[in-house]
Amino acid sequence: MARTRLAAFLIGMASFFSVVAGQLRPMPAGGLSGDLFALGIASKIRTDCNSTASASSDFGRIMEAAPEAVLHPATPADIAALIRFSASSPVPFPVSPRGQGHSVRGQSLAPGGVVVNMRTLGRAHHRINVSADYVDAGGEQLWVDVLRATLKHGLAPRAWTDYLQLTVGGTLSNAGIGGQAFRHGPQIANVHELDVVTGTGEMVTCSRDKRKDLFFAALGGLGQFGIITRARIALELAPKQVRWVRLAYSDVVAFTRDQELLISKQASEAGFDYVEGQVQLNRTLTEGPKSTPFFSEADINRLAGLASETGSGAIYFIEAAMYYDETTAPSVNQKLKMVLAQLSFVPGFVFTKDVTYFQFLDRVRVEEAELRWAGVWDVPHPWLNLFVPRSRILDFDAGVLKGILGGDNPVGLILMYPMNTAKWNSQMTAVTPPTGEDVFYTVGLLRSALSADELERLQRENQSVLAFCDKEGIECKQYLPYYTSQDGWRRHFGAKWSNIAQLKAKYDPHAIMSRGQRIFPLPSVPAASTATT
Image: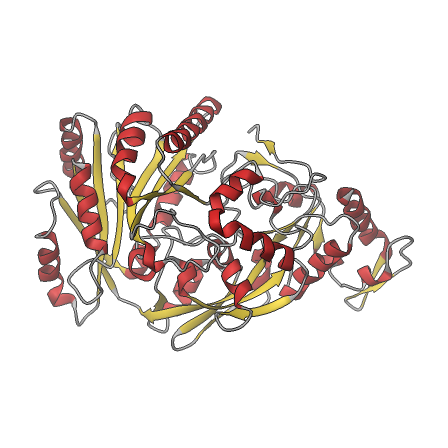
C-alpha cells in the first residue's frame, strides 16, 4: 500500500538522520534506500497532527481527508525530489500543491499522501521580479502581492480574479476569471511562460514555443500534469483611479442585452474596462462592508422598493468600472454619460464611487474582514460555478434563479455576467460550453451554509440545478468542476478528453498529481470523507 510505504519512509526520517553542521547525513536505513535520504528534504516534511490537520480541509469545509505529511519546500527542487520519490515507490502516493486551500470540494487535499505547502517557497527568496512588459511570479505568490510589486513600476497584470488572496499557481491551474475577462480573456490567456514540476519530477520551463503541450496542458489543467512554480505574466500600464459603477435592473432581458453590448465594445470605444453582473433574490438588500459602504441607507431603501415591485423579487445589477489617471480624469464624466445613454437600466438607479485602482481590485478583502468578524467566513461554502451558453441564459434565469432558487434567502451572492468565447484559447485544458456561440455566461452561486441543515439544503439545490440543465439540454460546463466519476470528467472535457488522457500518461503516468480532483483516481487511495464540522 502507498500509505504503508510512505509512513515507513516518514518514520525512518526521524530515526535514520543526524544533523551535522546544518546538513542531513544518511544513516543506515534498513530496507530503505540510502539514495532516498540523500534527497535532503527530510527536515522539510512535517507529520505532526497540527500540520496534517491544517491540510485536511479546504475553503469549502465540506470534505475532509488527512494527508500523511506536509512538505514545506524551500525551492522547486524540493518538490521535484518528493515527486520522484513517490514515482519510484511500488505504489506511488498522492502529491497535492496547496496555496491558500481555496478549493471547495477537497480538490487540494491528498488523502494518504503529501500536501505541498506552496506558501513556504517564497519565504527565503523574493520571487516576484518585474520587467518592462511582464512579471515573473512564483506559483506560491498571492495576486495581491503581485499587484503591489508591479504598481511600484506603474504596471499591473491585465486580468484578475475578484479575490486577490489567492496564489498565482492556484488560479492558473483553473483559469482565473473576473470582470476584465471579456477584453483580455482569463488569467491563463495572459501568461507567456511557466516553470512546471511534472508528475515524473522533471523541472520544465515551457511556453507557446517550448514544450508547448505541457504549457497549454498546465494552464487550466487542474494540477493534473504538474505543479506550477513560476509564471511569466503579461503587464500593461496601470491606471491610477477607478470610477466604480452599479446599475440596477428589474428586467433580465434588458440586463443581459446591456451586458452583451458592453462586452462587445473595443478598448478604443467609449465603454467600461470591467463588467460583471449580480442577481439579488428574495433577500434584504445590504450596503456591503460598513467600513466602505457603496450604497447609502436611502439607496438601500429605494432598491428594496424596486425589488418589491418586480413581482419575482429579483433585481439585477451591472457592476462596472471605468479606469482613468490624471490625464484622462477630465473626460471621465462625459465618457460615462455617453456609455449610460446606450443602456436600459431603471431610470435613476445609477450608483457611482471613485476609488484607487488598488482599492477596487482588492475590494473583496474588506468584505472578508467583516465576514470573519461576524463569524460567517469559516463556514461551509457549497459553491457552484457554471458556464452557460448565451442562447440559454434566459431559460436558466427562469428555471433556476426564479424557479429552483426562487424562495432562497442564503448568505452569499449570485454572479451572472458574459464573456467572449474568442478570448479563450481552445488549446488550453480549460473548457467552455461546446455550442460554438461567441458569448457565454458565468453564473456563480456563491452561497454559504450557517448550519448543517442549510448545507444539506444548498447541496440539494445545486444537484437540482445540474439536473435541470441536463433535462433541459442546457450545455453548461462547471467552472472549478467537481465530479465523482471518470464518466463525469469525460463528459466535462468532451472532445478534449483523449488528448488530456494522453498528456496525463506522458507527464504524470503514475497519477500522482492532485488526486483530490478525482479525475484519474487509484483504487488503493482512500476517498475523502464528508466533513462533520
